[in-house]
Image 1 (cartoon, rainbow over the protein chains, first blue to last red):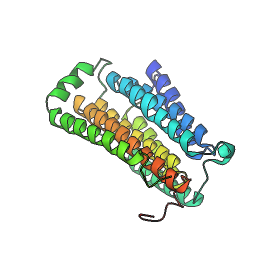
Image 2: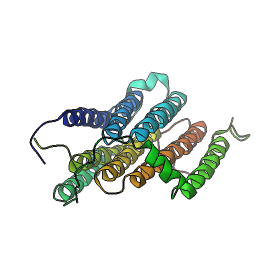
Image 3: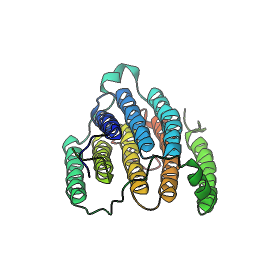
Amino acid sequence: MNGDFTLADGVFWLLSAATALGGLGAALSRNIVRAVFFLLLTFAGVAGLYGLLSADFLAAVQLMVYVGGVLVLMLFAVMLTSQIDQAHQSNPVGSRWLGIACGAAMLAVLWTTLVRAPFLEESAPAYAPTTAELGHTLTGIGFLPLLAVGLLLCAVIVGAVVVARRGPGTE
Amino acid sequence: MTSVGLHHFVLLSAVLFSLGIACAIARRNAVAILVGIELMLNAAALNLAAFSRFGALRAEGQLFVLFVIVLAAAEAVVGLALILAIHRRLRSVDVHRADSLKG
């Protein structure tokens, strides 16, 4: 913990401000389309933070899978399910105070615990690409989980098609 | 102003997780609940990546983040397919109205 303010620190504060702002907007926005676009800000901020943690492959995967895949999927779901004339009130609040209370309680517990937690903090190593190391690990001890995830993705594709298809019983 | 370390990343992820849990509990739109769940998953994955940089295990922590991202994508696909099926039956994605089994 030294006192000088480096470029990485500035980048961290910028990215964390964007991430927290996006999360706040996604959680509080009245318009579901706006909430999804705030989520885009959060995903992009987290991708930048991965880059700052010298996890360059994770940053690329985050951008490709989340921003390119999950977010587009969510926008499709919003467009297919919400009526256009209710766009300004498309994200109704159910139990607002319960949600705020649970979020605040969780934040209080986590914050008070983590602030005084004595992490064994090593000095961070210098910035270096870690993609090759990750690939070696993935084909080493991570090979069986990789196969399992492939099987899971296959099952997910089949299951999603079966669930979402237009069955004979529905209109 | 101290230099950015492990604590900063962990506290940011605590903030993200709390926002996600508040969003998932307070909302009635099923898509918004999925948004909250994605916020929580991102917070957890950020934690793993931070610990993998500042700890001793570097590639193993990133491996976990990779699998978390894949599982989050799978969960989003199945969740949105379920939301479409519910919408086709009820004409609504309000989770308070989806209260019947085999209805």
